[in-house]
Amino acid sequence: MTTAQTTSTPTSTHRRALVAYEKRTPESRRLFRQAGEVIAGSVSRSTLAFEPYPFYGAVAAGARVTDVDGNPYLDLVNNYTSLAHGHGHGPTASAAARELTRSTGSGTANPREALYAEQLRDRLPSMQRLRFTTSGSEATGFAVRAARAHTGRTRVLKFEGGFHGSHNELHRDVASREPLPTGTAIPSRPAAGGMEPSETVTAVYNDPTSVRTAFERWGTQIAAVIVEPFLGNASLVTADRPFLDQIFASASEAGALVVFDEVQSLRAGYRGAQGMWGYAPDLTAIGKIMGGGFALAAYGGRADIFDVFSPGPQQLVQTGTFTATPLALAAGQAAMAALDETAYDDLAARTDRLRDGLRRAARDAGIPVHVNGLGSMFDIAFSTRPVDSYRAHYTADADLLAEVRLHMVNAGVLIMPRGTGCLSTAVTDEDVDEAIAAFTAALNLSTGG
Ligand SMILES: Cc1ncc(COP(=O)(O)O)c(C=O)c1O
Image (cartoon, protein in one colour):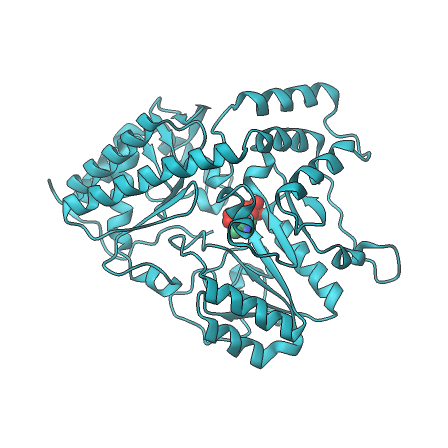
């Protein structure tokens, strides 16, 4: 994951926001410094670290989180989009508590696994067979492995800015400021764990020509092309139809598989982005909301691809001590059962209202903004041009975003440092009004008003 990078020294209004933040979060500052003595970087999850230091959550309920200094916040982060119902959702919590009294996982097969798999397949019929994992990173990693085993090829095509998890295979070209030429075999970053030769090649998101070029160069070697329906890490730039159509056409011609990474976009619609737009990828990775707040994800797709798991000398093996724990399955099942089509429609309508309100507030303040988003997701980018490509995302004003976001945090409204947020079913219309008011006030403070 990336966080918004600021490029210059803070303005006077930004400095005031930093002072206010430090004043209201002394206990968090103390805990962060203390943690640095034992945890490298003070937090194990790099995403959570932001300037000057992250605040520490103490308790959470519904749409609200309270920090260790007692400050309450409206939570529009929802553990980085993974909580569909906010915190302590009744049916999810009851299902998890019930399961805990039965078993914390006994190393035996669990009937819930197939039941939940059926529930998921009913929503995403392209997942004819599926397997659970503990994280979205594992799900995309195993989807790629299955594609390789099935095709007997090694290369994977991904798109610049695409985030598919923190494993070495795909955590490449996620936040490059300088574009790599289409078809480049993306070098390992030392930070990604070594200098082994790369089998991952890159192309440009939303650019059908770039897709064709990459396939012309590598077509016979490409096992899979993996794509997010929207760039979760980059202003929620959304895939357009000519781009997706080209991916399916090039992959089909070359004998490569198409993998949709719906780890985040399962939130976009009841049947994911694929159902909303009418695509049937060969393989799909899902995660986040499907765990009901617990560590659970899955990958699935065409039944014949999953023959690679059949016993035999070439059998692909997937193991994992904490894969599909009864607790995570029970919580996930309950959370997704409560997220029916009406709940998706309500979430989308409420988020539309928020997106409109944010645009109106920026227009009234005379600040150019582009608010992207699909379903229950929204993203704020301060830009004079439409943010419809990964490169356009980099033209947005990251300094202003960092400042506005900090003013909003000080006002008790949480969005991600990269300007993205999402609604849970716990968010009310009044909460949406509160978020719009906090954004309006933040813009005023940023312009010295
Ligand atoms: C699109 C996408 N794929 C994969 C992942 C990795 O999931 P996890 O963090 O569960 O490993 C994420 C996480 O943010 C994601 O947004």
